[in-house]
Image 1 (cartoon, rainbow, N blue to C red):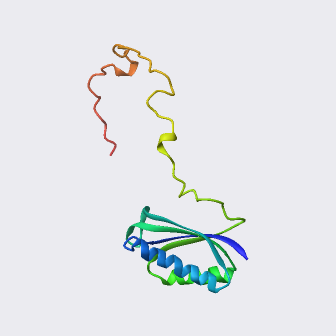
Image 2 (image 1 turned 45 degrees about the vertical axis):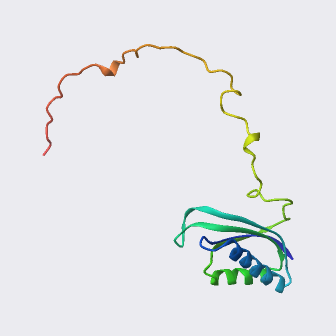
Length: 151
């Protein structure tokens, strides 16, 4: 059996329980065809980069699947039929990642270096630099010459 990572987007007006029920439904499809679902992550409601089927947000869900290709095709067929699923993507992988996915790893803001000047040293004070020096192209050229129309 092959290993897959499967991500799908569900409509924004669904509740979290409905999204979990949808995940369980597709997990049942995989298991009915002789496959196994490993990790399941619900990434929650996130904003979309662009509107998909009149939705600005979507519930994201990730499933790690160990199943034959026929099981994945059947799950994708059912997702195409279901109006609650906006998009899906299945990718064949060599092995499943251990631990949480990149989307679930919380980045702690306190661990990042601060940008208040501590890491770069003090700011240098240049003082008042005075007026700009004159440039050659800034001279007053006088009135513009009359234009000759080419007719």
